[in-house]
Image (cartoon, rainbow, N blue to C red; front, side, top):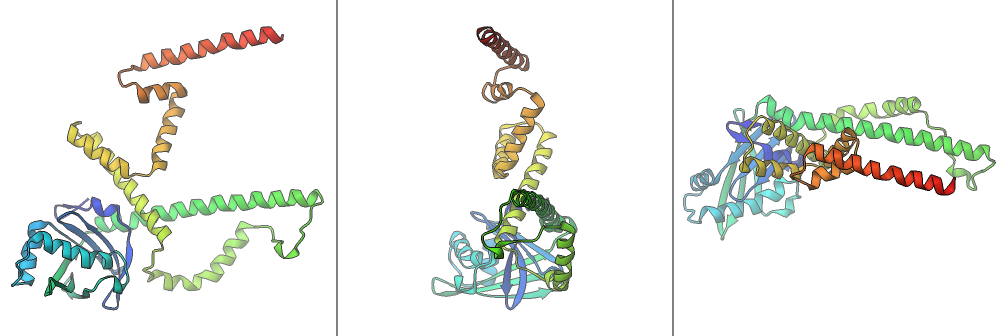
Length: 317
C-alpha cells in the first residue's frame, strides 16, 4: 500500500481519532518517526495524506521561517511536540500552538503557529487527496471487519441470554422464586428485541452518519484489525519472495504486531492438523528433527502407553 511511492504501513497500526481544527471536525491518523512523519486526514467526504522525510522538513522549515537557524533535528522535535498531541485527539489545552486549515483546490493545508526558542515558528501540513485504494485499506475494510466482529459478539451474547433464560426456567420449575420481584425479567426473544431496537434507533441514523467520535473500544478494534490485515498482506508478499536475513527480520517485526489471539489460533490449527500434540511440541523445539523422526517418536510414546493399560487390567481383573 503506497501513495506516490510512500508506504502507509505504519499508519495501519494507528487509530482514527476525531480532531477539531478551527471549528471543523476531521478524522486523523498520524505517525511521527525519528525524523519523519505521516498524516491522514478525512472530513468524511475526502481523505488527504502527507509524508515528509528529514530533508523535506528542513526545506519547508526554511521556506516558512526565513530567519530560522535551528538544526532540522530541533525543528522536528518542536514540531512533534506541538503537533502530535493535537493530531492524536488531545484537547486544545494540550498544546500552545494555534491550528488553522485551508482548502487549496483539492488539497488541504493545515497551518500551525507556535514559538521556537522565543521566535515565532510556522508550519504547514500540505496534504493531497489519496486514491480510493488507500481509503478502502485504511478506513472501509477495517470498519467492515469491525462491524463483522461486533455482529459475532451480538450473536454470542444472544445465545448466552437464551441459555440464561433456560437456566432461570429450570429454577422456576424446581420451585425456586425471586426474593425481590423487581429483579424479574422477561424471556429474551431476539426478533422482538431487534424490532424494538430498530424502531427506537432508526431516527438517530442521520446523526450517526456525521459522527466523528470513535470511542476507545472501536479504536482498539480498528487498529487490531488493520494491523492483522497488514501482517497477513506482508506474509503473502514474503511467501513469493526469496528468504533472506533482511526479509526474515522484517517479517518478525510485523508478526510481533499481530494479536496474540491470532498466533494462538494458528498454533491450535497446527495441532488439529497433525493430530499429535507431542509431535507439534517437538517440531517447535527441535530445529533439526525430521517429520519421520517426529512420527516415530509419537508412535513409540503410544506404544509405551499400551502395556501400562494391560498391566493395570491384569492387576484389577
